[in-house]
Length: 109
Length: 282
Image: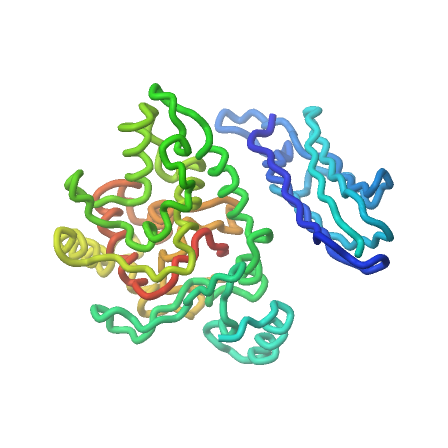
């Protein structure tokens, strides 16, 4: 079970319709790969964020499947283009079933 | 000093230093979210070197870039965790940091710049860790936090962040004079199987390579530091311990007398540089 998991997102507050802008996302997560062993020699089980997706006004913008090699505190940076004002929602799914979300409003003007 | 955008400064730096065997890649000014950071300053009088230089200057452009933006700075994740801790009630008194310090962590602007310092009431040298534990034990009825562990390092980072940009101003006279001398002695004394002193690397060879790493002046104006090598915050005592292990010496105790004296001395070597915590290094 991952502790202290906090998402952070940076989205510009406003953009012009059709303008390409950058979104940065980060989630603090230990991303236990399942390759490590503890001091007794037992394998520490895998426990990672396995899926990330970003939607805008209900429409999917980007999604990614994460595997064990992604390191601690996964950081995604991508470009987006929108035609109208609305809300970006971000979702991270954990192996243990937890779902972390964040959202940011953006105005087109 | 002009605030150059990151893209321009990166290009300028790479153009200036492409192919040149230069010691530091720090032609660009450092400004973090609008706060100007002094990375080079005239050395304090007690030093033989001319200039004190922040460790930031010795890192590659990519590493430097990570510190220039609070979103990109991985150390800030731990600051976020400390903010949660700040607001959490803990201990028999039923208080959190926030209950008494109603002005928030911002109340501590300027503190980090003077630490470690003499605490008259307690009659001893106090580091940030000491203050945190004093509050916890005396006022919260909570267990003291362990030094060099995530919770403590994160809280030290949060409180140190409040002094970002302020010049380090550690007192070396008065009640701390003797401890400072002890620290200076430790800095220059060779120890360990490799028979080395702090000064051998950090005063005689800063700017040179040690294997695949570039030596800095060993300043601690920027601690706790997020190290890319272990993906977490590191305290100054943890680093002292690491350095001593590297030269195959038996490290002194984290939070013990020797490292406190050393922390005082090393902090004073950075007088004039800005507090940079939490920083990003190798």
